[in-house]
Image (cartoon, rainbow, N blue to C red):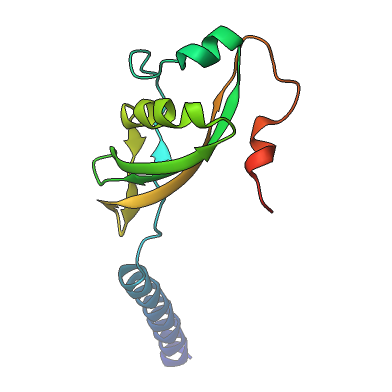
Length: 137
């Protein structure tokens, strides 16, 4: 009876060891998930100045922006469209001064594209979703 019990224990341990080895091997060969670049927060008032004409008229706008963020978290290229074209250049200038958390692939920072909405809200609320006009779907 003892040899059978010992054999059963060895078989159980061998299967557990194989299962854990298989799981460990799988973890080593499966690449880590890719993350996307994202806005890190903060505000740079010197770079984020309201367009003069828009400030005088209390205009608000929404900009849909496509940005290329490098591996160090800086915007290297950007483009987009705004509900009012006078806001595009100030938005690009403002976002170029911001910090981003870079995207990663296999745990390493990489260059990536990011899409974001950037809103300019005057002190008088517009009373509607500004970005809705730019959404096509």
